[in-house]
Length: 168
Image 1 (cartoon, rainbow, N blue to C red):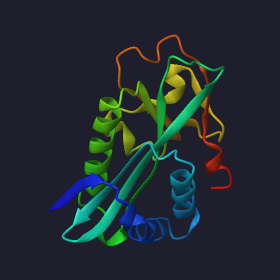
Image 2 (image 1 turned 45 degrees about the vertical axis):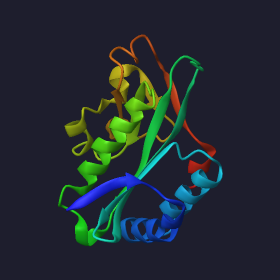
Image 3 (image 1 turned 30 degrees about the vertical axis):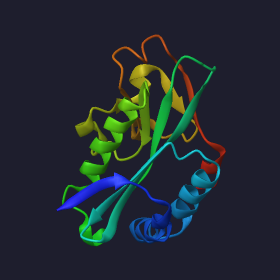
Image 4 (image 1 turned 180 degrees about the horizontal axis):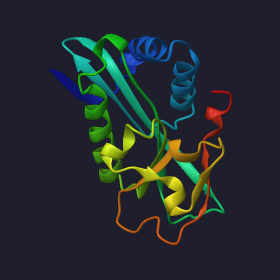
């Protein structure tokens, strides 16, 4: 049985291994380290099986153009589970706990650029339904979830991820 907890300072190497294994390369691990170093890892959780970290999720700030200072949006990225542990619901545990933490932190909405068949189970819808676009021309893979009812009503614009995402 996995438990979900906050990332600790001593978890960095294990998180790097999870990310490099799940994404078959160093890009997402570098992204997480850059977000962490920039102080932009707002919510970062790990899944622990026994004594081993087997999954990770991170949420960082996203801004809108035109700017909307009354709206707090976080981006879910990345989400990773060790390949040997995939298909066991660990990703779902991380997403559900992460979204609960986002809501507790007063976040209005969360966006994700991910598999259109995976994220709707958590309530995500096409971001274009809310009038939101993205920098990556991701179409239906770019999704949004209101954590506060109506938070994205009458809001339209380009969602911009942190500069640390450039090149990933």
